[in-house]
Image 1 (cartoon, rainbow, N blue to C red):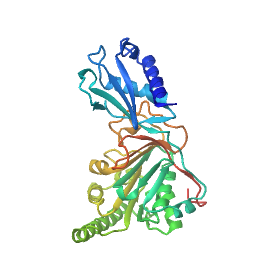
Image 2 (spheres, helix red, strand yellow):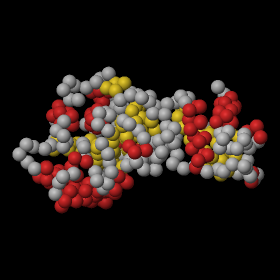
Image 3 (cartoon, rainbow, N blue to C red):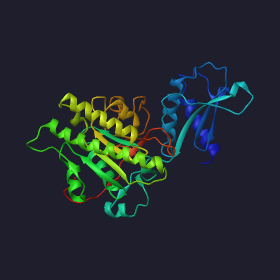
Image 4 (spheres, helix red, strand yellow):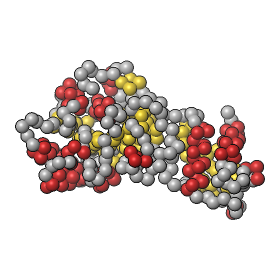
Length: 358
């Protein structure tokens, strides 16, 4: 299909779908037109018009175009209308609504041997889908949220396995479950509850380790002050079910935990100290707001609706985003200078690992 044919097809879909909201105005009445770009398309209204150009119109066009273009293109959902100025002197068509897209759709990675796959990776890159790769040098903190049984532990095991050759790991596992077994198999330290110790005692132990990480950050900052090009090895603090740590513990200990976590999240990026936080929900009772604002890799797995996405993606209305059916599917957002800031449909990698870990 040529660009001209694609534009004509899209124009026809919008003419038929926008009937009620446009009050009878169509491209046939010269009320608007479509222009394809390399990374999206423009909806160009001819003003004055008998319809209002607002968020409602933008989201309606998104719903129609996203379905019409699937699976050739995936439209990138915007939180509000995306206006762009056009290079023309004609005041009637000096603005347009831009709808960014990416070619194709999200495709799942299928890995027959995870250990071999990890050994073949070069540099600090982590493949997430066939057309999406994460540069760990640009990660501040990562969050994985999802309802019980959605595949959080499966996704976390993948990330830990991908990180074991490029990062030191400190693993906190309040459930004493999958991450603990993975750590035992791979020789990493893990903090987990013990039978004869209280929960507050367990969180105090975590605080001591977080305090050591904060001291390491300060040491690395001093080295970077003298030598900005000094290269450190990544250090990643993995906390599974972080909500379990903040509920039912002494208030002073909880406040210390939140304070340490906030400082690490705020100061860790330049010194290559990261956090990976996993929980069923990541509201203000699970992690401090300052930590959530530092997250630049956001993953929501499982049931996707306004209620489940309100903590990681507070401004997002997921209506219209085509999310594949199956386990380990959801949404991902990577906030760096390489990826679009928009939320993308996610299919977590399928892999095979050692028996007895998952």
